[in-house]
Image (tube, rainbow, N blue to C red; front, side):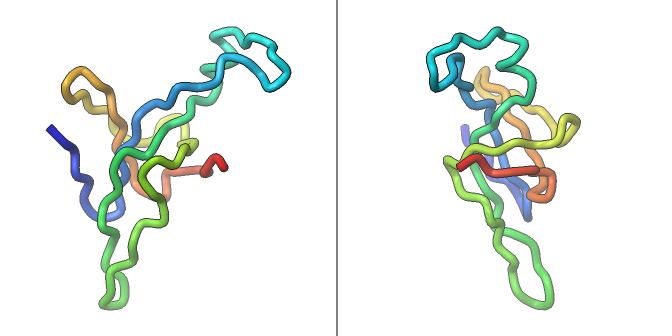
Length: 94
């Protein structure tokens, strides 16, 4: 099964976060889970504004941070996904 978000919604999956720093230090579980990183899995078509569709600016595969209490969690085929609106995304990790 696949999830296809509607309007300006985005489907996210918790991304694997680095467990070591660039210098090789191993991070504890508390530090690694402080602000979880998510991967964009699917993107909706956008919303209608002024007679034209305004597309979502995020792309599948990007890594993002979202607000702590943002979105709705759903489980599909044993995998937990989060569905959020585009404006719930705080930052894209580059």
